Length: 169
Image (cartoon, rainbow, N blue to C red):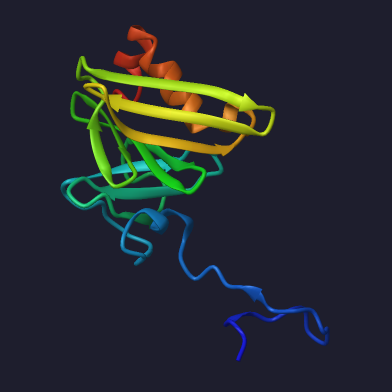
């Protein structure tokens, strides 16, 4: 038997395409994506870093993302991925935070380091360290600077003024 998928155009012999049964935002959580009418407590609204109008609500305790309608409150951060690594870059109260590779990092701590560089024309590397220990080290396909979440994080962390303003209400 084949893999379940979406059939090709009616009357064609085109192979079935794999279905995307989960909304894009749910790749960070438990996979139960759904439209919410009201934001939950202990959650913030984040938008897709690609900026195509996709919003999600992130549970601050679990990191789960659920698709929501826009306009449920101020946007507290952005989500996306660095290669296969899901990332949420956000502000929780006064604290600038990154959730990546299953870990939550206080980016306002003095012992946080970030490195971003192009390895070659097709590959980028992003490294986040805390106290000299590597928390996140990913290589991913190079993308345009406006779409590169790793570059955004590096640039924000290297600019104290921008760091204090980003995602502030």
